[in-house]
Length: 294
Image (tube, rainbow, N blue to C red; front, side, top):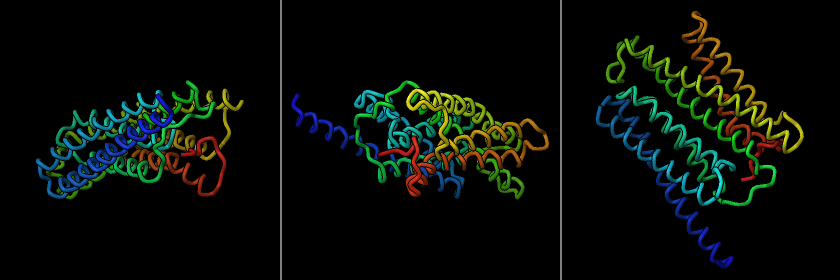
């Protein structure tokens, strides 16, 4: 196959991928609108429709990422475009799995759909989708594991925050006698809230091993385990905040609203880490290993 033929084929496949990705981002937006309509009207049909559209978009997104993996010949998480896509899909699939136990509870789905749509649009509008050769230091087993573990932990934290916010909103509605239609009875509230903690319990070790594998990769590539670039600093802050959250959940006097505060603070720190630290470093011209080139 000639070089021009290869370029033509790659351009065609990339254009197909982008069209599908735009359709998926649009579906996330439709799901968000339906979720909001359900929250406002408490209609069962709009809630089921919102869930169905989100399910179709999430499964299609997973198929699209699989397609890109075969096309790139690697796990598609090495660029910010790929990482944002991976995060959006992982968060949606995580919620779809968790929500099986909470059928009829759609409020967290609105938050997850909003996150997925935002991440997808940022990837499509601001980042390059090109598939190119990676620098030698990024062709590492440690690097791939570092990214996969970290991004999966972010997906768990995002869904945990969605449940936490929903729990706080529904709890407030219960106090004012307006909880009907949210899909939760008073007896289900504690179990629903516990789902938020369980997601952090899954995500925290993933983040821990993500940090450790990242340190191993940095040492193999640059001879240093830790360099204190903005991403590393914020990652460590995120780790400590979620550690405090888990400790607070084990203390009876802190396991309610104080723990919820630390969970949402951890989520905010996670957003500051990804993709906030990359944006801040680029804006201020701060050098670092995690400032994506594309």
